[in-house]
Length: 616
Image 1 (tube, rainbow, N blue to C red):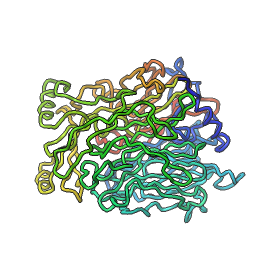
Image 2: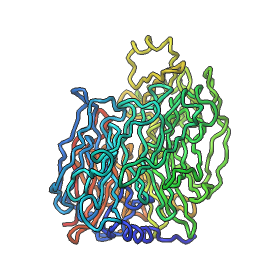
Image 3: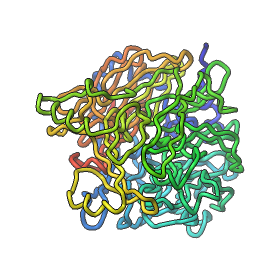
Image 4: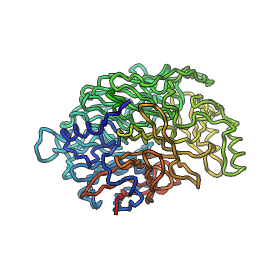
């Protein structure tokens, strides 16, 4: 099936509506559909090995998790437009930098309350921009929008960093007017999306604390005034007194020409017990298409029915075309990839409802089937048996076998249990928020995956105090309003390495039209083993390259798009748990990534560096 170069059409649309140039990186995914593809080819397979560090900028915004503040993670993806690079920090400050030198031009500080109990840590993934077509020049002709940790939508002038005072009261809009709002537990980590003159925001919710959590409502605001245009709630009204969340905490994608926005939703609360939310919990764990102007639901496709595993639709949707057919590609933590018709939501490749194991937990009714695509094949392992277990030493292997024998195991849809169940490829695994990149000339989708097993055990409320006294390694959350708390921990050997065999992180190239995997290779390393867990996204370029960081070896990697061969890696001052970008400035192509570590990986070094590479 021939592939239409959608990036070219999107570049023309964006050029007319946004005043962008081909060398810019004007949005999180470069284009509204989130393909993360750049037409730049100055850096190519023949010269990428010569890349050198060009500049480093330090934001100064780092938190070690002390003094009443959560730990920071630097997950921001910069944007480049109008000759300026804009990047957000974990404290929600916005820096405008010279893209050639990294020198700061201005900084905006929204003065976020850093002391609230943000469950994700101090994290922000970026911002959006909009050019007001009614203004020829002047203040706030181009606006930058950021959704802050303490639930505000701010608008600032891209030229000066001054607030756009006609946007809400004093340049900001409160996002706290949602059912069940709780400070800190309800916050924002991902950038807004602008379609037409509507700014669309989701939310991040700590959905394991209790059953009744804030509403995961998605909202559209007027880009000029900040007035609320519409709201769409994924949780039915009749369930809101017993559940909540199903929020869109990841990145949204859009098709401005068709006026559509594509929303990936997470689990209804709480994640691991669904007795309060019977049924399939539609539209949780789904991809939904909304009219960007009105918020009206056009279609939805559910990736997981009645989620009991925290299998959010974390991976951002990607919008492109196959031949003349517009499609949306989306994966989730199960490791499956779904390719859907953009206009109807119908699968391009068959999806079957596969029978799955029942729950043995009193009060729980697991959904009897799950939607499984046979094409493309799963991109992460789907089961882990005793025979598959791995250890760096014989002692590690024996310890893994002992822990495994205590668990209920099978497919990745084995429900949580009172004895403890295996969660694999894991709630950080499969396709997480790292997302995908698409090279339209090659018809190739580049997909990072993670495979790290976890054990999940439900703890009856009456036994919780005694369980906590044992101080088990891992995470215990209350799931208040249900009969059970939940205990989660990675299945690790005494050495601290996962009990499944490496690689624990891979990058795959998928022929999107054929639904076949061209190649799959490990990325980075962990403790001398190839294939580190990856928490950071890829980009693709016309130079035949895929760039990706996100690994614990603190490097930015470059792979050959056609073969998967690693051609270069550059050292970073801390792990780059973010998506890199590439752009042109002063006649040179640069590759830039935020390198500051992860908010939840306690053993990792944290930092505040924005690092740029270019050819000497």
